Image (cartoon, rainbow, N blue to C red; front, side):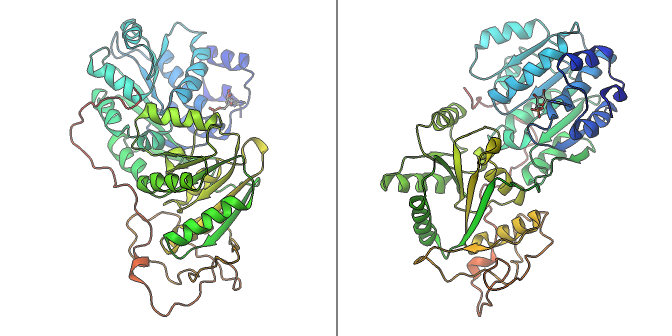
Length: 448
Ligand code: AMP
């Protein structure tokens, strides 16, 4: 298949030629035809898969081949969670518009607000933005979205993780008309918040899942330790941290409170750790990530807010202090190490509350993991035989059961005489599910 098969404007094909891009990637092959029909789309695809052009090409084609709905409003708005990602998209968009008469601008948090207002007054056709700052301009009436034809949400799951739900809803409301098309990209479609959001924003979207997160991380050595309770987890963690030298380490916890508590605990033992949680303001989060990526701390303790996006080349160990709620999230988390061909380690601590998630990961990856132990720290917990009945968020990939292959494998749970009620609640629900509000109110932008 070639790009010319998509009946794209010849200027776009020329631009692709200049960029040295010839054959469409898998996400491009699947998403471009759907997007060109004007349908809404919900797609999962990794960064690096070519997903930016999978939405930019149909966006350009739409603008080139149809008449604008209004004279002054932007026709395409692309929203991304961070400035870094927005800049990456903006630079690809600029290459495409360079060959046409259309104007593109970027509106990012942290940049001069008045300059942005002036740029908006010049009526750009395309805007690449972070949601907080764009919502601020909307509130100030520096732009109107009645004429918006295409709304693109890239890394939608991450935007929601970062607390942009209200801003996204405000933008959606301002651009709420029948002829609007919405394309939503997310690292995972197996995410309750993303799905709830899609119901609100998208009309009967086509779903495309590419670059399966099931794919193995061959460069990452994965190990799992059973734990009885929190104290046991902490003892194991300290032991494992001291056992081997690592450059940088990311530790994932289930809740924001655990993040702070654990980081303080590690600091008390002399380790150089910092906590990053979703409730911090965007600029504080950016500062923490910057300082960690510059190597100023060895250990970052966080929730899933940091499980994807940034390339942290020095992370050689990822620890799941708690297993993630969704199996796909596990893959994103451990993918923070072993990047660019480097070797990495991933260690997961599996307590009774993590057991369901652990089994989901095994089913999802079609693997049965061996369990590891630390001498002197072997607990009593050997797994649960039955699956808890009462999971509050039921992950989809919950069909297969771990296989039973002998006493030292994960599926070989020892029979339990009496089940502890505490274990039956299963998956830790962590953050409360997003509540729908009928009318959104603009809030202060978190990244400023
Ligand atoms: P993305 O996943 O959109 O961040 O794209 C990652 C990189 O792949 C970018 O540098 C693109 O320019 C490049 N790219 C996108 N599509 C193609 C393609 N069909 N063939 C070769 N490279 C591509």
